[in-house]
Amino acid sequence: MGRLDRVLDPELDESVLSLGFVESVEGDDDGNVEVCLRLPTYWCAANFSYLMASDVRRELASVAGVQSVAVRLGDHFVGSEVQEGTGSGKTFGEAFPEGGPDTLEETRQIFLRKGYFGRQQRLLQALRRAGLSFGEIAALRVGDAESLPVNERLIDRYLERREELGLDCSETVALVVNVKGEAIPSQDLETYYVRARTTRLAMEASGSLCSAMLEARNSNWTST
Image (cartoon, rainbow, N blue to C red; front, side, top):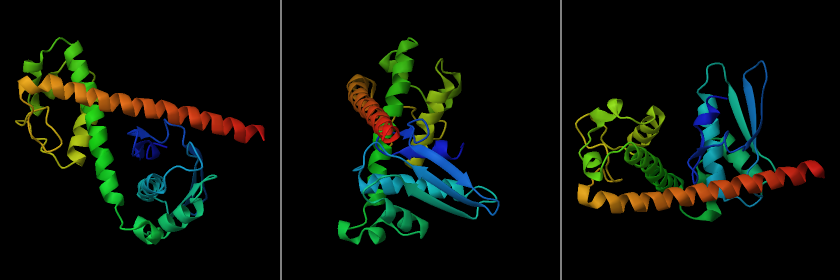
């Protein structure tokens, strides 16, 4: 299950495990694994669903001893297409040619950046609560991260996403940078913080809605 914890809902930047999307995981002695995902609604977007299914397959396929991975979407409008496409290694555009150009990687990058804002804002919030001024925060370098009076996990998640975006994580580079890798001047940091907070709150609201919809869906499923 540890590998699945690394698979994120692209819009919410939360693990499919913590969101409750993983309905079952089954494997046999020959190394064949099947994962069933149940998403919040029957109509969850095909591109988001394909992203998650592809990531599940990639993570589990890298586990020693695993020979094949099948990802099934329970009660989903394109469940069979997603299962067949990811199982045969097709791109999203190959699996859904009627959907136009294959922009799945572009979509992934958009939500990686969105998640970056959320992770960064949580770190900024923790630094502010620890008593640091915006000027002091703007002066921090990546190399200062280990000595900061905040939860280590906040820093790790932020730097992890920063690295995923291809941004410089050298010790001498500013700790707080925008998605282009540019340092935020101290006089602009408060405004930047408010914008990042808005992004994070929107993501958390979406996450709460998804959890409620999934709970309602599962309740209806088990009662029928």
